[in-house]
Amino acid sequence: MKYQVIAKTAAAGMLALSLCVGMAGCGGSAAPVEQQQEKTADSAKKEADSAKKEADSAKEKKDSSEAKETSSKDKDSTKKSDSSSKKDSLKPVGSTEDAAFSVALTNSLGADVTSVQIKATDASEYGENLLGADGRIAGGESVRLYVPKSDATPSSYDVKVVLAAEGEEGREVEFLSAVASDYSSVSLLEADGVSFVEYATTSDEKGSTKDAAVARQVELEAQEQAAAEPQPEPETYSEPETYYEPEQETYYEPETYYEPVQETYYEPEPTYQEVAAPVETPAIPVQTGDACTGDVVLR
Image (tube, rainbow, N blue to C red; front, side):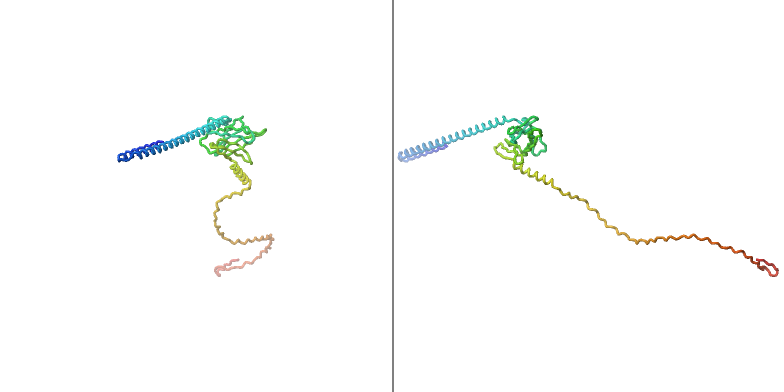
């Protein structure tokens, strides 16, 4: 802008000079020309002073902006340095070499934790105990949890811990969708019969999984109640039987059966027939042949 004012001033001077030369050539007086030159010079000086003030003001604003930016960077650097220092001071849990990311984990369960296992939310089985055989997270203690790398990057991870108990086996507590790659810190909590986490993201947003945990608990109770109720027997489909028209049987009148009459057997009585004595019959002479011969046959 300073150069623009100087250019305008030079242009005004050239105009005044040409005006003066024109008037002198025409036989006019030079006094008005001198007055005009003075006015033009004063105006140019004022414009130059104004341009200088604007330039100084712009420079001050620029210096102030740069100073603020530098201060902000210094604050961010200090904040990051403090965060890094705090991060490094936390006890590591898990392998730092093959970790996908890490998150600050606080035990707010009121008892020591003797086991920490983690898995992708869509996986079926948990990994090994990241604390090892003798590891322990005291109640209220914060550690840095290193989440192992996997072939795919899941949207969230589930965490299962075991709480220490004297003289008996520890109680397992599961936290669903407890850790994500954009979480900076996680606190493990139990309340109203559910387990949940309160978290903070890397962009300083805060949240809780309690509502989701309560909804899941209600769903599980409904499923258990439904399983306890007697279920109706499932209908089984069977192929319908083929119907055959029965053949018309021919009816025969049954024969009348008569019981055979048992004949009474009588032993025949013996009969005796008296034989008559033979009667001698006198022989009767029969004539045969010629009567003249006088042959006679006795019968």
